[in-house]
Image (cartoon, rainbow, N blue to C red; front, side, top):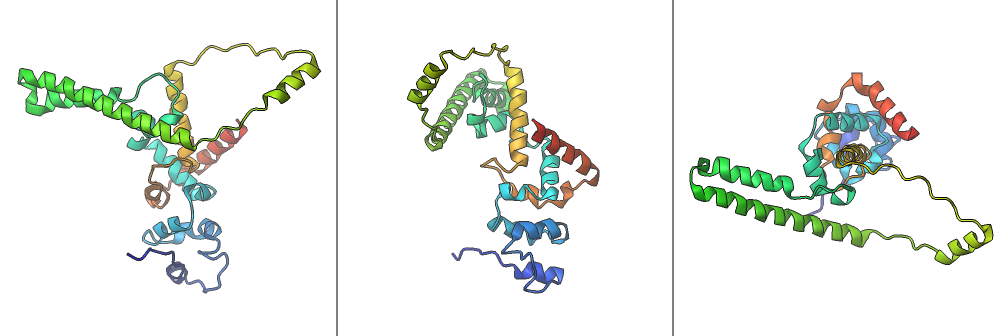
Length: 236
């Protein structure tokens, strides 16, 4: 099967632009989209994902607005349980993956399967729940192993640190320890971090195309609020 390649001709033809137009759709796609995204038809836009990345497209205000609006719609893939299971390496709390899935399997067996009328259904529910929890735990463990294999931590120069301490003659005082975060606080931070990473195009395993090219997410009244959101984030 021939690999689909980006063709700039349909975009130029649709907009009535010359072949040597600058910025060109193929040579400078981000600059081109900044100027013409709102004018292009939906059937041409997905092809731009062939030559741009979600992170690169973050600099386009209209796309940032769409992503921000999408997070406000409480999408399933960004809710706490789904996000924690998809990106377990970003979750730092104690809530173990598989717990919510276990509840769902048990509820299905007890409430939906034969309406829970048979005494054996209760045992089936517990069995399915146990299997689902173990499957989810194993999947998350595998994801964490994969992420760990790809993370390269810089080596610390211990000798250099010791020499600096000897030269100073004094040890730095440790900062006072703050109260540890609760799981509720960690969950709130996690959800905020997931939404931020989504808006900035930093999440893998998620379909940005269905958001970036969706003009139904355009809300002009949210432009000022969106700009404030990014300014506040930059100040942190």
